[in-house]
Image (cartoon, rainbow over all chains, first blue to last red; front, side):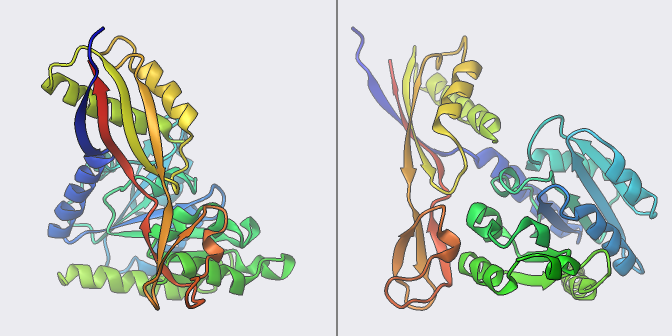
Length: 224
Length: 116
């Protein structure tokens, strides 16, 4: 019988994606375009937040949106109706976006002078957390009806984000969601995360989100 | 949930090393995957069996070592292990603080492979 020998491999499984992602980040940095990856469960308010963001930021800022959806164009049409350049990537059953798909999205936007591109990732708290999209900032939404236990179920997602938007706070009085418990759980996973309470429906807290985003775009534009 | 792209990536890396090393058959592949990843061992193997048909890696067994979730306390630097279900409620055993930094648990790594 033939001998079995051992070959050392020593490679990161996601190295290819990570390399493409690093390339996307560098390339957009030279163009002074901030890339933000927005993630959440389905129905927690990603599209509503993008629409609010367009309203809040629009003046003096060029923005593009890359929408990922398993098979629909509804979101991109809503965004484009607001006069912002939007393209829809159909992920065809894929549960997340990877850096190569994002590259295709950026190419399809075909704009070189954007200040900000927001990626609306596939609605899912698991897979998008594992795949670097090349974004400079990761932002997630958790909506009140989903419950304050989500950091326990999806710790990786909470640990990789720069900002957590807690949406639908107009539902707080109707639910047993405990904001202090949520904050404690999230900060235990990620002490540097910024937590902003918002309601895309009433507009509460949106100004804080816009202020954060506006500042990030500004510091990117000035090359800091 | 995302076993397919991960498995595709594993197969590509394995076949690249097999080609470089004059391999006839890959027998086993040793992986190191962090406990924070949601991958199911059984599904990775299923997908691998499917994707590797007709290649040098057909029939190879995936042997997965799960690396623990290790947190380091931001106050006193003590490292401690947490499990997936309670990580958001984890408390430093030395000083009782809850803020910590993840130092292990996200690995996606191919260590080596057994070949003929």
